[in-house]
Length: 314
Image 1: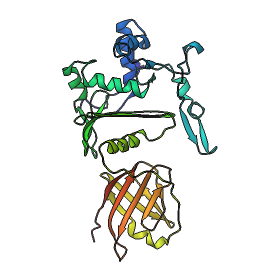
Image 2: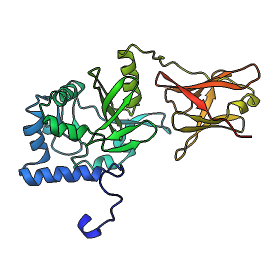
Image 3: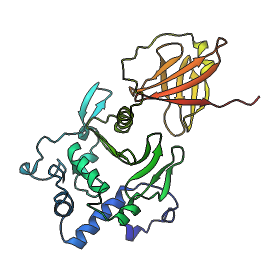
Image 4: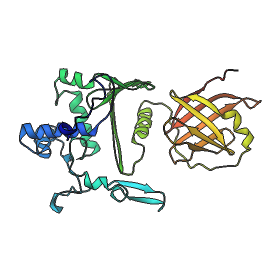
């Protein structure tokens, strides 16, 4: 198809970042062509077996015979707004079924224990030489200008208050996963979810706990009624570090970001609001006696960070 269509090149290699599952499917196809094995058999013989990953294999529950089924496989679920309950992801997204045979970009079943072995193998150069792994983990291209996150070969690298880290996030209907290793601390955090929970946010909170930093536990929020006039002083543009707008519409407060739908911020006090999308996020303001915002903070998955309000020119 690519040879026939001859699609235009978006940019030269190394200039920009654009994730593409098709590229990884092509890599798997190359492996099959060169090795003469299926991707499943090649990975078992050359990767999973030598690393003693006994609970890891290329697998998809929607193909193969009943005898091939992985025991205790965790099916993916998604929340249905209409039914007010979780349902199998395949009922929401048919692509889960009709893309079941594609490999290279995903389709690997594993456990937290095996993924820890995988992380150890990379750290100790059991899988790749030190020089090859250096290329893999190098900061080839900037993918997040606000958080200063770079893309290597299949993984992201960055640095935050806990030190340098290597991370890869997995997303598929019904699933969210995240594997992070903090290099200097030699701490690995692995989160696997089969109901689309925020694996990245949970991973970050667990990292804070392991580093002895404050994490605010989740709790049940209760909306209260407040005077709509108290909302106006809270509005404005805040840096987090990316710009975030807080707006008031028809007596309600909303968070607005470019390219995504507005999210209502429901009051649980005159100065603290929680996100109406059921995520573990709140915005808290400190107000002076005249109703002006002295400071604000975002609490996301238990971690507090400053929101810097931009001053308005007059």
